[in-house]
Image (cartoon, helix red, strand yellow):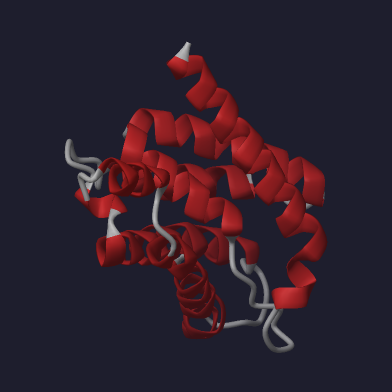
Length: 171
């Protein structure tokens, strides 16, 4: 029962984040380049680092396809970039979940979102006059950095497990 509850919870959170990202993200966009944080990729990286490469890849692919259908652009582009980011996050999966704690999570988010954004923007800007270094600096690095900054929320606020332990006197 707990396994099904975890899957249902992940799906509901992802759908909620997708809806927020597709509707309210313009409020958080920076500059004329529309650099915005990717809330969904943060959750996918969390799932990949917690559950492993295969589970992360499945969540990443299905979420990416849903995001592509919602946005109506390049069907499969978000799917491949989210799949790669979540798969790479699976390499940070350890028994003690050390990559889900504090600042190691920020490193994980930056590395995986960089890889996902690299694939996404590299394919997205194929055939345009924008050069590769411009894509790398203007889009990949800035989007990854902004997403990492937003993921500070996860680091700053305590997780449920830590809160429960503090009430039990185990913290």
